[in-house]
Length: 322
Image 1: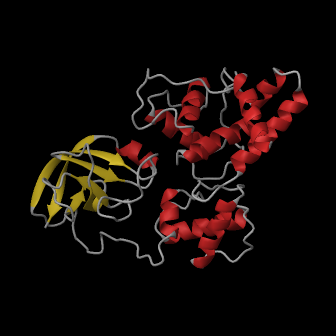
Image 2 (image 1 turned 90 degrees about the vertical axis):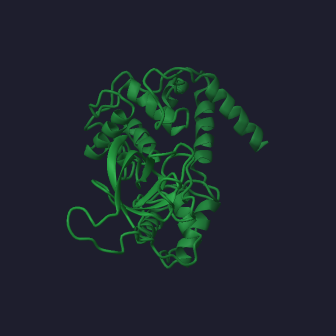
Image 3 (image 1 turned 120 degrees about the vertical axis):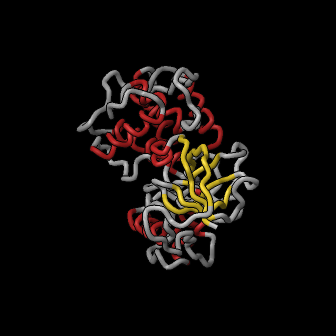
């Protein structure tokens, strides 16, 4: 019976949701409210915003919106207007891939806001009850799901137990991702050299499953001067990638964690295990490969999508250290 109710709820809501969610007024610096919190959650999902979704359109939100607009070829003004919201919603729900999106590509329309749905239906109380049911489903986290502040469920129990095993959590294992749980998660992420964003995704799960962990350090050797001693210089076409991108593994082709200090290469040009120096990036080790990385091409690993967008695509000289 409960399953049928949920199905009916989803059908009812989506049957009336065909126009734009974003209000006529653009969201900008200083605004507050549930719509601001919504776009913040979308930005967090894209790893562009690294603070909690508090419903306050502050400087961090402005900068995250600018990064998103810049990546997708929009006017960079830090204001979330209709077009920015549409693309942000589509990216958050995997309707578009922001790493390949080009202006003019088809983007589906987002659903309308909950308030618009309520105003368009006579049985207001019934729809509000349905919305609350869906909200409960959205907040539930199973094992393996992405976990954020405020979520509840078996996945949070699993996370709390794992954090406790690693010595980062000593609170009650109650299945609620409260501030104490998220703080413990951030401490764990920081200890593993990861971005301490307080979001448990695939990289964090992988680190939690490791009983013993030694942070890989490709730069455990020192060089002096602007450019280290090298054996040869190679001109390459360089792009950037991150395990934060949807669908990418947290591990490289050689089994190490994808992280800053790793590059993907064509092994016939730059063998795996080769140490290199990249101006503007630093020292790196060839530990990964890629289907599009053929010939004199490399893919440079970063920890965040924002860093990838900033790096872009460029032709550079890299120094091979042998």
